[in-house]
Length: 228
Image 1: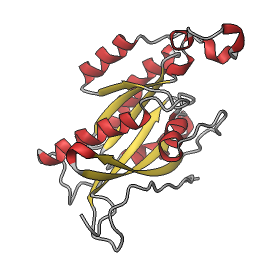
Image 2: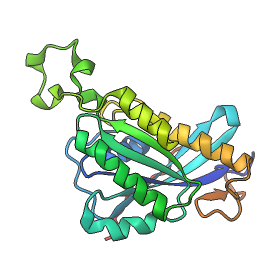
Image 3: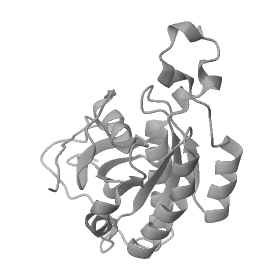
Image 4: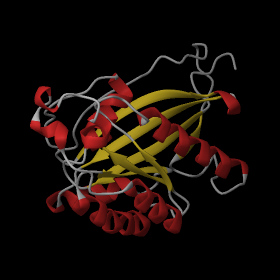
């Protein structure tokens, strides 16, 4: 493994309604921090991260494109779907509407992305549910911390199974299951490479690393920018 920084580069997209926490999930992954009031995504923002899959003896570089969740940017975000190997389809567990709209986002991804793309359904903001903060004194919590869960875990899990999606609930605020979501999707992509579903030489969302001057490293690399 000497001379390699990573074994594969996987292109990921993060999609779903506005305000479900897509940007917060990306920032948590790449920077290990949480922004209380992140600016709305205008078009597309980018971040990257090196993750290790020990059981596969692989280091994967994730190139993640965080897409805007509003109709006005739909034509821009669709262009980033093309060639993606992985997708985080995000909804807010305290917003029934965001879960209902996930069906629309999934249909959009399947229309414009690689047909073999690995998609994981991510129920974000579990930290806002009353069940998660039941042990706290309500008087000491801000109103935003006392929201009702509107999407039961089992309902989301069942829909994910019906659609052939991976599934996890997460919190960008606490970091709960954020890396796990990307790791599960990356493992599934690796399995598809082994099965010949993705060609690691010609599939645009999967690139095999080329030898570099530096040795294998798990230090994360990250960048952030906007397409417009």
